[in-house]
Length: 288
Image (cartoon, rainbow, N blue to C red; front, top):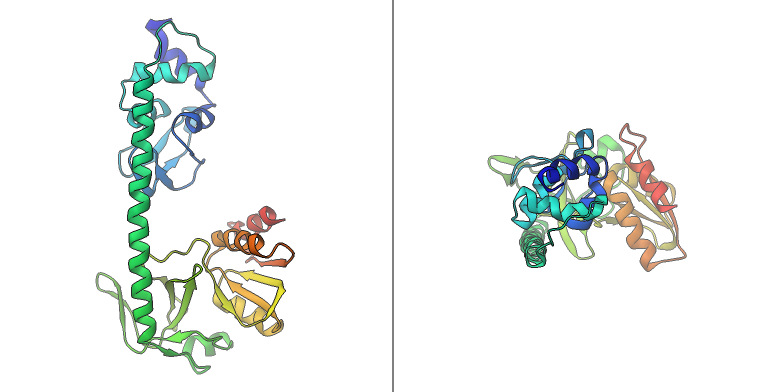
């Protein structure tokens, strides 16, 4: 069996790689941009499992199949990786596993995650500091703001740029653009909305779980929507209820779960756009 160990393991593991890798390499999600278990990052890795082979694509350390990922994570050769996978597919082999190798691989993966977490926190702190500086140079948005006039909505205590802001390279957001703060729970970033409706998030902003609260003091009924314009329109219709802008469909569930944790009896209503991705509808399903 040892002569054909790699072949046998790969054959038996076909279609089961997601479960196997989650046991050996940490949390891995199917077809979702995420951190690489081997080289870290934030969203450089995608597990697509083509033909059940556990395939993946990583912008950092390259692409491959599931066995090659085990090789990278634990710094072992293909045979050693196959020995590690063998128990998960019901194979019994004579050669014992090197526990030191396994432990070294796990520590390596944990250290990579910790390092990326430190880098991300520093980036987010820098963005929060810059966001505050930009807000101090803004003026309160008025109903005469071009974007607000186009959408026929009030400003709800947002801001307006008084001078251009450089986002990256030569790209900038011009004066007159609407500025919507992102709270998480403190100020963590900004969204810029240009007069033509084009939106940009300040680089490094902590958007996940972040929101912007529109007027309303009734915390028993809380509306959570994607875009500022949609939330503003709803806030006008239900002035006593709290309305939260989550900035994108994928963040709806994060904001909703955060609110649920602090206000268990509140009625939460998701204002999901009817788009092709169906992300908003999925968020509503998760919540209910």
